[in-house]
Length: 317
Length: 138
Image (cartoon, rainbow over all chains, first blue to last red; front, side, top):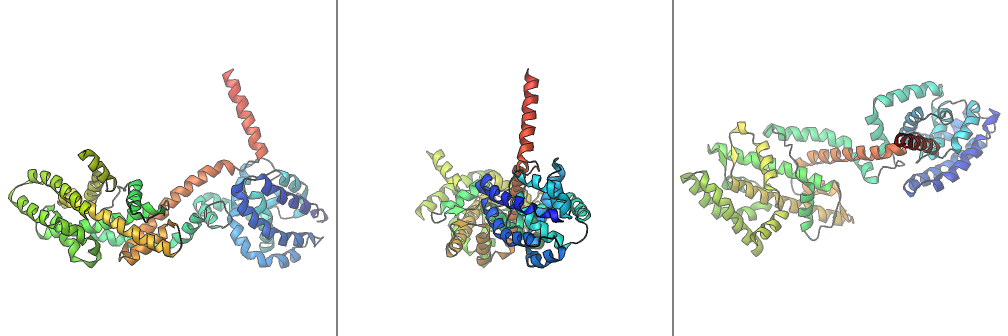
């Protein structure tokens, strides 16, 4: 127990060396980590005799940080399993600090990649204080659980503010659960109408280009075209299935542009399409009549005509 | 000339083949209903209009929030404001899926860093591998 004292100087020396040796990417986590450490270090050093009670008193306010750190803990567990040097493993898991001190010192002098080092001191102490059971056992259990469910570990870790994952993915993981639950309902409603899953995706680059054709639209986040593409897919499903229903009502096997127009004009939701549909109106009426008289050979000519007309009108508008 | 014109047009339109494929996925052949070419072309125009509408609405929202980049959030808000709130869950799901794929990529990239090995170890391993490679070539 008395041998615990040398541990602290080693730790502090590591903190100062840690951020400098690391790249700029890991600097923000370090900054936050070091912010929390000074609070703990005195608490470790002041009780010269390493008493768990005192530690508990000091560290209970930090219990919230324990939860935030939990993913980091588990990550380190798994890493340490892979790492061969015994010097790194002991300090984190064997709670009787006295036994591990010599090894701990050597372990900390080794520069750790990324935020591992700075993380350790923070979770270590609250960990012990909150779980007075033998740490080795506890660790063994937890590590096996997490090893079997790596997906959980990764999602939790990304939600942690100190991880190297970007802020956007933090948002992602925080908003993901409702998404999943809601999406099931959303897809089911879409599925009722027509159980036809659309597997083809729109090219995101094209969507982005269309979005940015509007001069006012500036930067677009990476997932945005994907979100728009999905919305577009839903939009298409709605339009196509409804116009197919119209075709069925008319006992037609082909959805004509006019039917699509009819669908669009039937609902206020599609107000923004009325202009486009209105432009086509005359063509389509003529086209559908012509189609009624003739067959597909005509329909091959029509699109070309329509395209040209639309093009002209677009320019005029 | 006309080629150029069409090329320019296609740029701000959607690929016909893709749209046709999606339409036939929505309307399987068993349904016995096909989409005429005019209808498809009209649909493409509507799609482009839809994208434009949503992105300009999302742009307004992002500007209100003093954001320079249009994020997923802005799209979902725009959809809600435009009366397409039923699309939102599926959109969020798609975005989340995409994010997860990306996260997986990040994780892979970090695996080297977080291989659990210390720098010394990695250096040793590298030296060993260099030596092995050298031995193979001599």
